[in-house]
Length: 278
Length: 155
Ligand SMILES: Cc1cc2nc3c(=O)[nH]c(=O)nc-3n(C[C@H](O)[C@H](O)[C@H](O)COP(=O)(O)OP(=O)(O)OC[C@H]3O[C@@H](n4cnc5c(N)ncnc54)[C@H](O)[C@@H]3O)c2cc1C
Ligand code: FES
Ligand code: FES
Image (cartoon, rainbow over the protein chains, first blue to last red):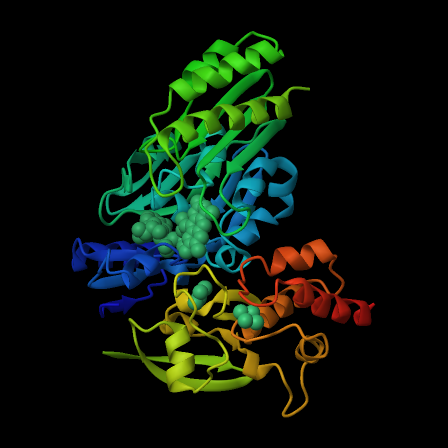
């Protein structure tokens, strides 16, 4: 690992100013489960690392009937997955978080790091997309909110400016979420998704999100509008799964071929839809 | 440049100087001669480097030494009390839960992390807790049995 300067500021302002002052090769360090690996492999070689874990407000996790759930940027996946409110009201998010890596990884990795890393397979991305989460951002020009679907731009590219720091993620409060997360991988533990998907049913609306099937995680909007107003019969589910697969543009890589991924999207979405139909 | 850090290492306060680019695993092994934690993959996949940070299992190969500042670090060396082995260590020995021993410190630290949170886990919970640890020798059966024996003794 190349040497670098290390800073651990205690406020967002200080952190943002440092990033700007030190220039483009200053990187934000959160749990480090993506960044440190990239640094060890020499794929990313920062001159400056700004560790944001010293900023207290980023460790908050809270729920409010009006505002919904806020998960601070530095809340580790295990704490989020086992949080009582998250387990009760956002079970599908808890399940997705529990599927990441191993217990050791989840004691360091964060959801904000997972989405900011912008891997097409990020496991927490599909519940966040399906639940219309918002990303809260602090920056040199004030704060802004980015709808989660606008955060992802391309493989490993997010719509953040240098100097901007994600404070956390907000998920709206819903009366009742019926949700299901599916992860298809070669082995159950410590493996990346070949395909991942989430379906949620909120009132009578069905939302479908897919990961590891395109340059960014996506919503399967055509499949969603096909289902709209229909009863979830076997035929409707079969057809919706096909439409969802047609919205994807998977690649071939070490984990699977393109053709296999397309078949697996159908399987995952079928499982999802079967799980949420009551 | 070196950075000064303070942390608790195996129940003792230590002050140390580290370069930013060294992992905690390197710092423990090279500066403190604590060679229990092993480097298997160096990528977070095998668990041979598992230690407890503030009581929770973490891969030391993926944590910077400098991130230990202000933390409580426990390695396999800090488990035993002099020559008196910890209950998990003793049970691994009694159950023959190791062959080459490379994975053993990590397995024991993962199990310790679980037992600190839940003294009476089910067998499935034990399996889940060690699912981030690879063993290339034992086939896991005896490892699970060794941990379950400690659980039974705790009941
Ligand atoms: C062995 C192993 C197994 C894994 N398994 C899975 C898996 O099953 N599923 C999965 O989805 N992922 C997996 N991962 C990837 C990884 O653990 C996750 O992506 C993790 O959630 C990243 O979070 P972090 O806090 O560690 O991020 P970091 O590594 O600290 O940061 C990741 C990126 O996000 C940026 N960043 C972090 N926080 C902020 C912020 N607040 N504002 C702006 N930018 C920020 C960083 O600069 C960096 O570019 C695995 C990794 C390993 C090593
Ligand atoms: S050496 Fe750390 S997980 Fe393999
Ligand atoms: S005893 Fe050899 S790797 Fe586990």
